[in-house]
Image 1 (cartoon, protein in one colour):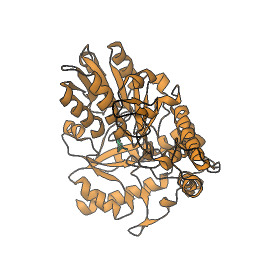
Image 2 (image 1 turned 60 degrees about the vertical axis):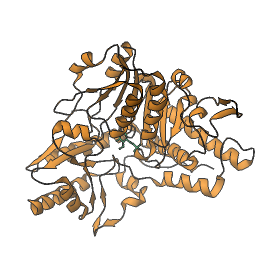
Image 3 (image 1 turned 45 degrees about the vertical axis):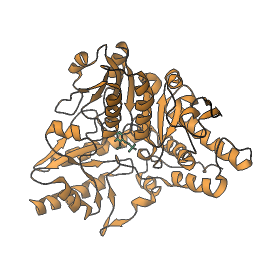
Image 4 (image 1 turned 180 degrees about the vertical axis):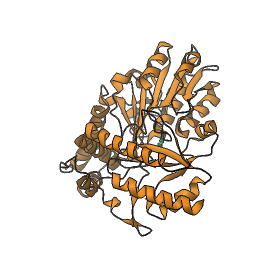
Length: 414
Ligand SMILES: Cc1ncc(COP(=O)(O)O)c(C=O)c1O
């Protein structure tokens, strides 16, 4: 019932691009160059077909049925959970909670673990480079519990200022919530150092892995983080899917998040008892086809292999960085040595929106604006940037065309 195994020669970019039908189109008369992969990646046929297969072959609601189709759907859904477990090296399937995305996963932890454990004067530690999704849920819980938010500063290259950690982590620190990779700067953060320090202080750590999951192998066991969150749509999977990994003992002590079907064991008007993990946190009918397709996205990544993906992405990052450095008046924000292929930049005297619009006229999709990290740009004293973010299906030829398009747009706007 599941999709046929995919056969891709991972060293052949052109064959890989054939897996992504969307890439083969013209935008405003020019071949599309899609450089907005940090916002969402395009989807391979293997993932798209897994959704079609579900709807044409075994669409049924899961877990509660005895009939054939319900069993097929339940089996495929739970197999996807097992693929996620394997992919991030969790200990058991019960530690994998399906959510609608990273935002949903962080809100779940804030509203259950955060709300039930934080007290007045406790501290939640974030960093300057957090996405709004990893700021606002904590502000909401801080407001309702009286906890305080503290913030890890960064250096001018866009890395955590680790020298500040000893004064920021203390006996009042209860939760540390930081991203593994910055969506705005591309920095890969040294999360293991922070996790170990936080644990010594008795704090729990949530890692926002939205931007890491498609670029670096994640091993939650090695990291020893308490929670790890990510979205399916940023790793070649569908929108509306995401994962919360949590250590079993923590998930067990946390109260449920949303009430409804699936998350209960028994219900009466006097009393309700809750289902075991992971179902306790999965109220209502989930995004069944989405989760199955997320499992297909994991297989897609596994087939390409991290080694080749990392080589390819490093090549793109180096080429894009050098290309931008070669253009007079262009400044890159985020110059850490440890980055995923994301480059944020500004061209002197030109509004990012104007430049982004002229790039679009030439078929090039980049993101402009604050990228949901306003506190970060406040720190840099700018209002936002242009961001080009690459994926394994991008190639060096596209970077060459990107350069010509940038030069043309800059000369028109100067
Ligand atoms: C670092 C980071 N965290 C959280 C999110 C939110 O992800 P989603 O909108 O899929 O919930 C994003 C999305 O861009 C992100 O880049």
